[in-house]
Image (tube, rainbow, N blue to C red):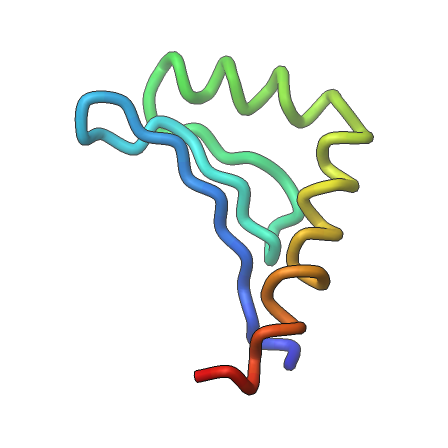
Length: 66
């Protein structure tokens, strides 16, 4: 169960601008705008805690369903 990864990606015009990666525990930006957004989101500790909890609530509960 340790290798399960939750990713929440954000796209604009078919280009990934930012994503939350549960293995890193933070947002990562891939464009200039995405880097700015990722830095802003990473400062919000409640948002980061919510995304980390999403891995447990969404991924780990659905492991055996496939």
